[in-house]
Image (cartoon, rainbow, N blue to C red; front, side, top):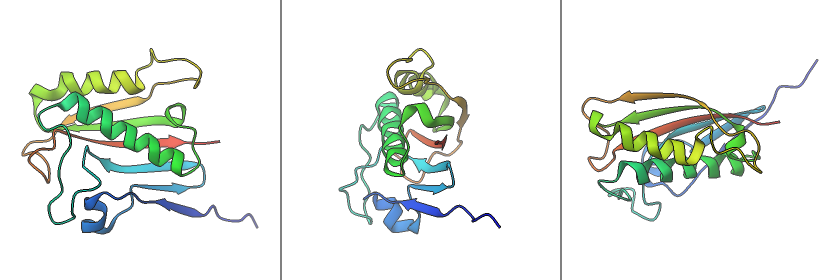
Length: 147
């Protein structure tokens, strides 16, 4: 009988992880699932989380994607070349272009290079009513497959 893949967890200092009780990412077999990630200051307290780059949707996107890449690497992945799917949740239509620019800068298919194939299937959804923190402009979920 084949053994079941083990589940491994990756946590950060995010105050929301502490407040809500979830992990930044889970690896099960060769799949890594990164939780909704925002541009939160990891050093801010759980009872008063602070968002980095208020008003800058592009920089919040880049920060959230980099945090997701760090989680993938923390669970044994290489990084951007392992990412297969990204879901981007945007607080309002006006920020969609900036979020797209941030995605393109980090994961755009034009970024081929020493890391190998870069690019991902992607979805962008506008969230009516915003997020848990009024300064959040974007939240991303990332899925990766590692070999």
